[in-house]
Image 1 (cartoon, rainbow, N blue to C red):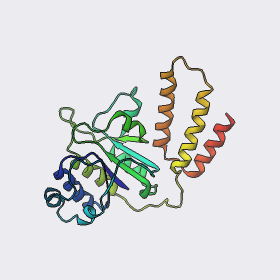
Image 2: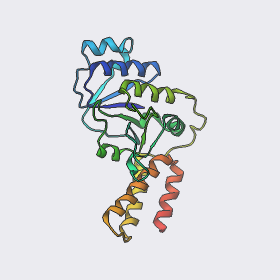
Image 3: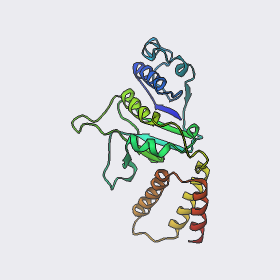
Length: 223
């Protein structure tokens, strides 16, 4: 699993995230358009003994090559706000235990503004940490620590013989759904977009196996 930080600004937070990643056995850290220096003295100081994470940091300007993108947020929506309907870190652990961890991205938002709505829409699903209603926004290094703690539990995989659907197969399912939606009549374009978002999130949260994806594609073609 890659931990991806969007436009991180604080070198202390960056170092603390390196440290907590090393604490729980995660090594792959990716920075999207960082606003601070990964090699600063503050980053190195806060990282403590996580030199392996620091040395292997990748800096990119876009997200490519992942079968699943998991977005994080402190801002939960209602049932009507489909993109912001999250699961908990504990539920996340159960969901991703059967997946190829090398093709999963955990997307962490900006320190001040979090992730944009457009970035959240691109994710397969959303995870949030239940916190006090009086002060529900966690420091990002604390949030990463909580999520990685949950993911580090029960790492032994007893169902690794089951092959999960890849991004290519999920995209093909979604394409089949969109072809069906395009043949339907909707009162407004907004209602059609709502259906598209619902199905995208259902596919993201369901963690289809490869066999299930092919069966679903066949069913949708018959429709």
